[in-house]
Length: 332
View (cartoon, rainbow, N blue to C red):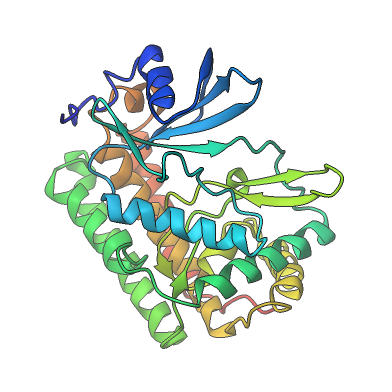
């Protein structure tokens, strides 16, 4: 069964969610709560024994089965080594299940709050666990998951936006030129960094994907949602936690590396990539929304997208990034 690519979750009714979980060998009690997610659909579901699980329904066509299972294997590898990632549950011998055309996975519920990144001790703690994640990630490469690079996150998304005429006519030429300048800047950053090592990453390591708990015996960060896990440079999992102001970035980076380098080496040449990776994320983000615009959830969630003002702000953002990529790298 193929789901409608324009409205891929139209058939994902509350009953379908519960029946899917039951089909994996669990017994639900009717409780469910939709959690914040646009790329996939994620629900908290109650079980008859009083527990809750989190169920992710994967967007059709985004990942292959092999790519999803490789993500699950990575988080299981981390959990086995007592790195606080949240692995998928093995039910009926598998972590990936299918029900009425929907592929889904069940996770244990992991509560927590956003980490206090103003606390130097928290930053060092996060660094230690990121170092441990990367020490495991460096052991072997992904066989199926793609790389996070300038082609996938910059060149192709830019081409998609221009070729499909997402830009207002009066701004299309400006965006074309500025976005190419940005990509040229990205290329120069990669040249300055040189041949840095790549490894298996979390890939989308921002505050929303780190849950901090204060439970006795379980205090500290838990890393969730490895859905964007890819191969790339280690700094990809660091820069989104650094903040915006350069002084703040320097302070946070120093604290994080203090913990990180207890478990993994960090190549300072990768600091040339911080603003390049930020630029690639900005280019990729606009194209991501554009690709999903036929999904009814996106126009309601991003009503400001594709307005004149939206594209004017993106052009200004890219101009700022062109300048930022010419600045010296952070020092830590």
